Image 1: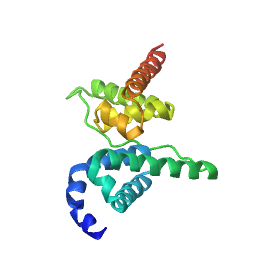
Image 2: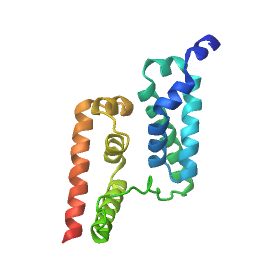
Image 3: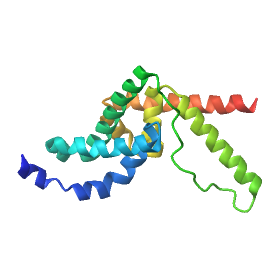
Image 4: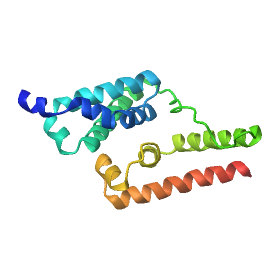
Length: 171
């Protein structure tokens, strides 16, 4: 087993998938600290199963993170300590020198994030993986253990729900 562990290039995995996995963990977790813990625990868990890790590292890491997060969420729910998630990071938005356009763009992004965060998990997770993690539909299907058609349908439904929420805001 130690020989197999030696073959797994952990530095390469961290360099290649670390930033994406970190953003994913932060988007799932309840706080920055929880996201960092989830990120570290994902790599530790992955190193315990080097054979699986070598087969398809990206999907294995994301699936492991998702599984750990679900387990923690159940634990938090039992203890009734669920806290709202914090946004990934502030981004520079289009608007240039026009402060009004910049403010409107930031407000729209905030509202889209809020609507996406309020979606049921089955719609929110594919949305986060697709847009925040820039994963392909096939990879999302592998990560979530769903058929590709189901992932496509859930993405479509999630987009429609967010658009509907934005439309209600304008009225």
